[in-house]
Length: 246
Image (tube, rainbow, N blue to C red; front, side, top):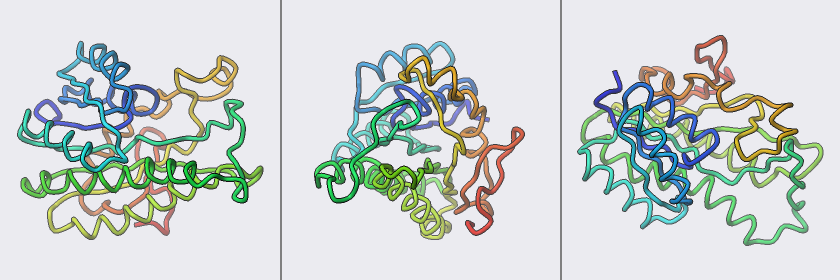
C-alpha cells in the first residue's frame, strides 16, 4: 500500500521521528528524513535505505524559506507527497533527569520563542507548504505529534502550550482542508519515551519508541471521517484520545 507513496517525517534523525520513518520504510514507502542535524539525518537515511528508498534533507522547521525549499525539493524529486508527520520539536525530557525549564517569571523571551517557533510554528509552516501539493492530488495525510506535560512540578509550560495549540490547530485544519480530501490528525504517544539519547537509567525505566508500534502507519491510513481527531495506540489499533476531540 505504501510502496508508491512519499512520506516526509520532520525531526526524523532520531527518537520518535526515526521510529516513525522506520515503520514507513518497512512498508516500502519512499521516506524523507527531514532534520536540523543533517549529519545524523544522513546516517539514519543510510540505515533505513536498506528497507526502502530514503533521503535526508536538512531543515529548520521554524524557518519558512527552509521549509518551503525542503518540500519543493521532495516534490521535485518524486512528484508527490502523500504523508507529512510533524514530529520535530523541542522537548523537556524531565523524566530523563533533565533539569526543569524556567518558570514564567524567569523564562527568557528567546527561550520561549525557540520552543514556540520550533514546535508550533514548525507544524504550521510544514503544513502550510505541503497542503498545495496534497491538494493538487486531492489526497494526503498530515499527522501532528501531541504530548502531555505535568503541571506539578512546574517547568513544562512552554512545551505543553505548544502541544495543546497543535491539537487545536489540527481540529481547525481538518475542516480547512477537508474539501481537498486531506486527513489531518493528532497522534498522542500517551507515555513518556526514552529514545537512544536518553541516559541508561531512563532507558531501563521508560518505554522506547518501539512501544508506539505501527501507530504512524495506521494514522496515515485513517479515513476522512477521522480527520480532526486526536488518536492514540491501544491494543494495536488507534482510538480517540479524548472524546471531546473530533
